[in-house]
Length: 91
Length: 91
Length: 91
Length: 91
Image 1 (cartoon, each protein chain N blue to C red):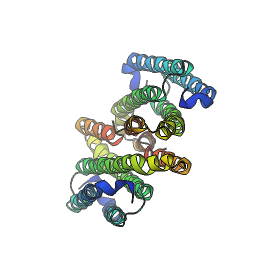
Image 2: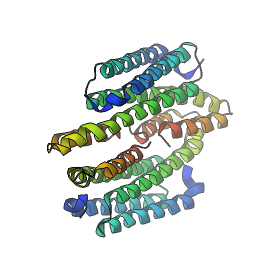
Image 3: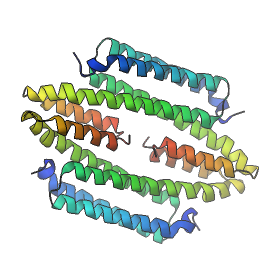
Image 4: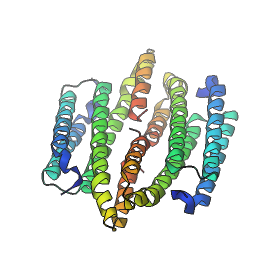
């Protein structure tokens, strides 16, 4: 059972909303809407994805990482977490 | 006609690929895949969206902004561009 | 004369403040202050630097880029600007 | 004793280098150097600061957070860590 088990439904809802937003952007491009308006929508999806990522990271630390440290074998999970944070922050 | 007119097909292809990636993430959540693997996919979609945004900005500056400056009324387009860059960089 | 000519004093003031903040962080490390408090200060300096970068970009577009387009040779400046925005947004 | 105790010297060296870079940018502004060249330096300092932040986060998780979880009272440290990561990623 994974970290996000408790928030699985919320996660799916957010992802479905993001999918709908991406389809909305395709429609905007199809209809030749204004570049800056499309860019605004792209930023909005990026922010929604960041929130999903932050949520996953949150549950991961609270559950997977904490449990593996409590069981005395946290080292690999900590390495993995730090690598994920580094990628997530764009470095 | 907007800045991205010449790259409309490429833009639609990228957006369809992004939509597919978002659906893939939903499937990963559905199948209880590992948080960090899902996070890696989220980062990959974020990077793809940033590339779309950068492409839109690129065409916008090369066409819309340049033309309005050439016609002597660039001021509003420049304001708008700078606001868009500020949002795009996350400030 | 460059784009930031009119805001040179403001720019210098901001940079001096940033230099002071960086020295403050060195002091925090020297005094073994708490990691998270130091990280908060690092974030604050990063935000101040982003604001400086955004200010430079702003003046650059309003002056250098606009003038070179008006004079009919904006192409190189536009290329350069887009490359700078791409680096600035971390892509 | 804090997380970064073992890398204190390295941290101070990086911060001194960053301070020197910020002073270098002030000199560039003083000498009216080209906006884009200054922006490139600003980006370089931002990247160096991100690396310092990532280093602090790394030591913090490996030491402070891990130890407090091992001692059975990790909850507050985990909250604090997640808030710090959220700020660090710019959300």
